[in-house]
Length: 212
Image (cartoon, rainbow, N blue to C red; front, side, top):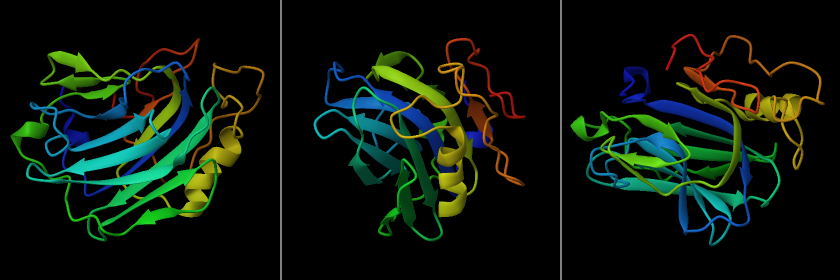
């Protein structure tokens, strides 16, 4: 269903652990995003894609008439990668942080996530859901500790999620790898509006206070 707190965001941060499978087929693969009635990049309020041609992530923002995109450095197949992408509408800026690395900034965004009726569709993980009727572009691999914030995290906050939750190439602290002891990283004073921990022994329920 449509979740109002994921619609029309003027600032957003997405954090996730991503494990791309090297046998993934198809060029474009949907990691997560807010769907639309048409499924086009212009109409989807926001979407994070994985492209098998170059093993990079692409973050799209649509405003019903056009879309903007920023790409990350390449991920490593068949191992865990930590990803944070932030977007600020007022600054027209999108930033990637990969495995606790330096900011990869694109300051040329000219679109806003304040979309019209085309954006009133479901948020999905692992596959696009056009008009909430047609599934396409399945991501093959593993996903864990997916969070969305309605604000932009800075470099220190973004990399804290990586430093506390795991390390590049290793499974994050979730039920995916129970051998890692500790607790999930929590940023003081900043609560995600959506948080799917996922993992082998964890349900797919939202762990934020919004019950998405």
